[in-house]
Structures are given as structure tokens and as C-alpha cells.
Image (cartoon, rainbow, N blue to C red; front, side):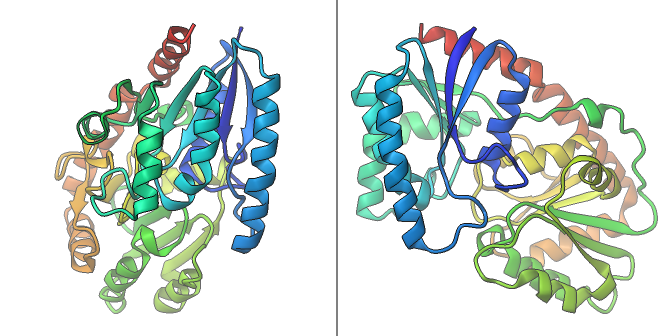
Length: 358
């Protein structure tokens, strides 16, 4: 049984609401062919203040060097890496140290701000260049990401492995109500970069007329925006804050809601998007990261403009009044996940990649 050291935030998605946590947790739970050891890298949702983060990273780096020294040469490092500012600043030295010691390693990218953004601070450009020069396999989430990595950054080894989700519960769900109230779901971190201000502006346009709408938030609030309270005051009983959901309640919410909202400024390929699509929720999303490799406008979802409240309003209005289109796109969204993002294929391809490292 191959030994894998998987580097990721907490594998408990209730402790850390992040795509990396969800992906790493899925891999460990579903890949029975490998023996995983988890190396905790990244902050928890409850961590406060930059001072504590710096101390944690410094302490963790010492633990990392000790782990590399004691690690079996046959062990493969599966390093989950996000190209946003915290991820790059935190992970650069961890990655470079392992590479300089000739450790077997794959780097699993999870999108982030700077993968496609042209303008970058000098330090970020320098660190990204150092990471992408490493001659190790990089996992990209789509062909779009692969082209960017090869053409823009000169990465030598890129393997496309889009995220997937456990489809067992979604496969049993065949009852979606397309009449009556339209339930909208946002699931993830509740913060400004997820487009919360524009979503608020869009919902404000519906305040007097949206009796047939209910907006659900599932996740944890970060960034100090006070969004949960703002939406509660705006929409009253047409807004429900679910908190961090898991288990039976999460499944109920995925079945209940017909529309998934993600007006984000940047993404990779969100696990929340794939989960919601697998239950037939119609995604209303921005064309960022790898999302539109799997969401096609007016076919299996609606693609809206970034930082545009009117775009959100028009999309919701269309789905509210055209229930035949809603039902058609719901079926297409579900079909996309079941046909293109099967967990068996994902694990098989991942194990092939592990084996290629010897």
C-alpha cells in the first residue's frame, strides 16, 4: 500500500470551510489503495490575528523539516496549494524545501487569485516563479488551467484532474420541486471576494416583490462584512442562515434548493458547485477559474458578469418566471456531474499519477 503524506488544512470540513479541505477529505475517505498521513497546513476558521498566524507557520515549518528528514523515501507528498496571497506566502518555503531534498511530490492546485491575474506584486511573482519552475507533476483542475500553467508559467508536467464529489446520495435523489417558492443557496465562506456586496444589491432589488424567493446561506462568515445580519434585516423570513452544514441537514438543503448562487471574483473548481449541481441545482456563476469548463450558459446554468448586481438580478428573475428552463437546466447540471466527474475515474487517475513517481 503506497504511503502518501497529504498536506492540507483540517480534514474536518466543519472546522475549516474550504475547497482544499473538502478535496483532501474526499481523497483520504475514498482512496482505499493508499495509506494517507495528514500534515496540517493552513489556518482554522476560528484563528484570530496575523501575529498568531506567523507564529503558527514558523512552528509548522520546523515540524515540516523534521518530517522530511524522517520520511520514508518511497513516500509521496501530495501538497494542496492555493495561488492566493496567504497560500503563496505560507507554502513557498515548504514546497521549495521538499523539492531541494528531492522528495517525491505532486502539487495540487486549487485556483486562487493569482493563477490568471496578470498584475502581481513582485514578491508574489518571484515566489510563484520559484514554485512553477519545480520539475514535479502539477494537478490542474481543467484544460484552461493547464494551458495557463504551460504557456504563461512554463510548467513542465501538468495533469488535468477536475474535482469530483461523492455521488451516492445524489444518485438516490430524484425529487426536485420546480413549482412554488424558489429556494436559492449560497454555500461556502461568506466574505467580500465571494461577491456578497453585489448579491446584497441584487436581493435589495427584490425586497418588495420577492415573496416567492428564499435565500439560504450555508457556511461561515469571514472578513468582517456582517453579511448574515445585513441579509437578515433586508429579507426577513425570506432569508435563512443555516450555519456550517453537514450530514443529514446538508443533504436536505441540497435537495430543497433549486438554484446555487456563486457571484465570486475568483475560484478554482468549487466543490460546493459540483455538490449542488449533482442534486440538480442550477448554478448562477461568474466565469472565473475553471467554472465555465463545466457550466455552459443557458445549457446547464447561467453565467453572470463579475461584480455586477444587475446580472444576478436578471438571472434570478429568469429562473423565477421560466420554470421549464429551470427544470431543463437542472437536469443538465446533474447530468454534467454524473457523466464527467465520476469519483471512480478520479481515484484511478490519481493513483496512476502516484505510481508514475515510482
